[in-house]
Length: 314
Image (cartoon, rainbow, N blue to C red; front, side, top):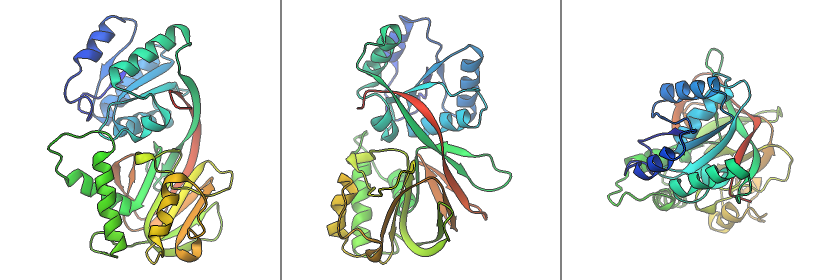
């Protein structure tokens, strides 16, 4: 088990989790909060023959673990992963992990490990492999965003949260502020992203884009499913252009994953299921909430895996 003691859900203390683990000395447990520490912990797990890793941290912790595993720096074969909702937002475990407070979810995992009759199941899912150019090692995660998404994350991190809210409240409020700015065409808050996109090796197209998202998650925060592509690719790709029209009428499609007669390329809305996306852009991007510079070379996103997750979601 890998625990990030500084993640949003663990800051108030880990006494219950530690008490439960004390009853299960067979569980190898590391507490780490840096990418280097997380990588070292996973290497130690691999050396000890671990086949399942429980991640008790936020989306950034999962991202760091996926990157170490995806690069082959720890395991020769990806272990089974069980993600607990222990972050501020916990978008990844809410889709492929285990619902509920960390100690309750961990109890479920331990029962499953003994008998596999708990209400959990194995869920195969691809992750994103993100390459930023020659000489830079790939990154791995499950949610890539650029444009208004990175602006929203910066706004979220600057936001005041005196109540210490976890879950989807603060990201939801941030999303609302960004939508208001988009509706008002307030480019000071949501500057258009000038990007050239090449989808599944088709000729590239340049556009002024408000946002780009690429994910292997089926559900984002607030239950959003902003995809309506019908192809068979493993990557959900959605982009909204800066000259988009009829946003109010398209909003339902961002939540219910249904076709909408207004969500068309002619109105500035693009959504596909793909196997490769190449983006040229002069801006930063996010991967599972962590921000990165795109650099001078195109960013290439492909599916990796599938990885296996122990999940309470059906």
